Image 1 (cartoon, helix red, strand yellow):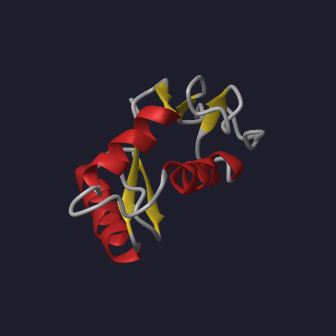
Image 2 (cartoon, rainbow, N blue to C red):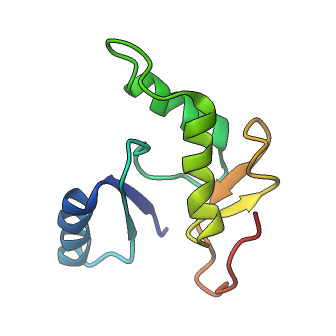
Length: 110
């Protein structure tokens, strides 16, 4: 199964990409230039769980970024075609995201 790894920044993304190549897997790495890095995305993961997990991981000593801003950052890979949204990505309670099929080259619709 192909996995999308979201890495926090270009440096970590480059290192992770090299590790993926060295491991001989076909996983994809998305260097993310902000703090929405919640690890591998399993198929059918709801956006609200991604946002909640990111808020929890960044909650000490206080919530550093709100849920709406994190949702905006989560919708960007959908708009770039890096993730496929099953539903309206702006409805984070019901929308699920997944990696595009390897045969599907069309960008996802927002």
